[in-house]
Length: 59
Image 1 (tube, rainbow, N blue to C red):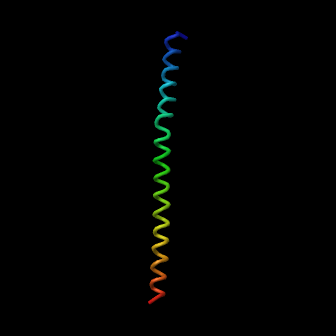
Image 2 (image 1 turned 135 degrees about the vertical axis):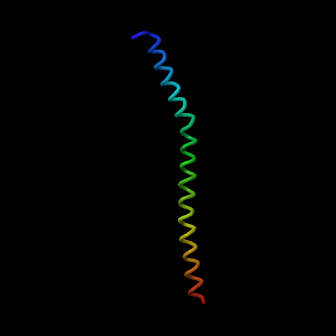
Image 3 (image 1 turned 120 degrees about the vertical axis):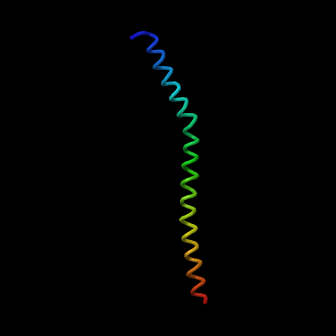
């Protein structure tokens, strides 16, 4: 195998690893924010339904 092919393969692998290291935390943070927001909406709707039931029982 010619040396230039080996060098190009290592270059491509290095660039892929660099992109994963660079973009990985951004994607992880985005997933964490999305997951937190999704859980918060579910908690908010559950709390809202509890407030409505307690208000209706107070009447």
